[in-house]
Length: 370
Ligand code: FES
Image 1 (cartoon, rainbow, N blue to C red):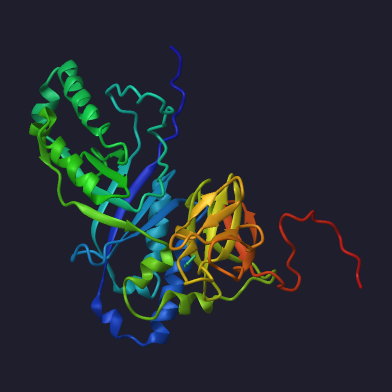
Image 2 (image 1 turned 120 degrees about the vertical axis):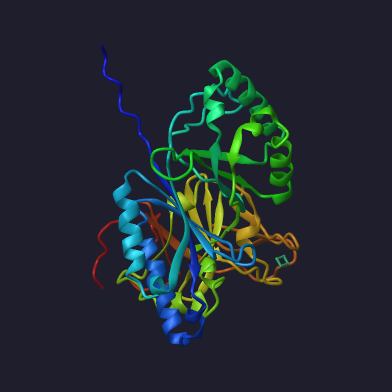
């Protein structure tokens, strides 16, 4: 008998946090340092687990943010929560909902959509979708009494309906045996209306009559760590981040490659400035986030990989991502560019002209002393 080759499985935690409003009455000084400490604690786990922050302020009353955590082992999840509990902000946070799950191959057959690649269901790869819709899910025991062929038939209907909503992407993880539900489902999408229509249609499917529980439901908004901390109120994250001491080489860690997959962009903060990061075909570029025409957020612009340029989302000003120069449209002034380097999974930036800072794209060679 041949031994089964070990599969790479991941543990997944959806932890929802609620802030005690007493924190908002602390001094701005303490709020700023608490945000910085909390944010840096999360960043320090960048190489150990994949962590995505989402905001729920303005959406639900019983939780303020979600940390979607994906790790290779349970110890990493324990270590992260332990570290967060030790922070000043952690003293004001409760965890009203926490769901633990694991990746696993489905027992049902899911033929891939025409033209789609073969996704691995064992490794979580979050997209850049603006929203995440999360809920715990339990089926009735009667479902498991049905012959597998009958269940497969109902799952086929489920898949047919899902494919009518290609803008919605599903991540299913398995909880039964680890936590109080059977599955945690997390749908990603840019349009809440698409998700609403999808689940209303799924509710009329045959499989739906075998659902025992599928609440509570969380609608979560993806945002940078610092933007998420700003939704909590108190001193601004930009103020907190501006206190972060720069490294001796002038570079500041601002993101991980896991957070910035090829083709994506995001806003980060460095030295109190908002900076737009772009991953163009595997090369990371950083420019000032504000358009010099009317201050639109360039991280929300459209990237032309061929020209290595971004088009502003408001009036179609075009900026080179390599030089910051205006390539078209109404802006007359260029945007500042930042130097970028990648260490392991960490993206670091430094403003141009910082003494001792070399452009990472330059060949590294000893320089003669002057
Ligand atoms: S704000 Fe960017 S082109 Fe007008």
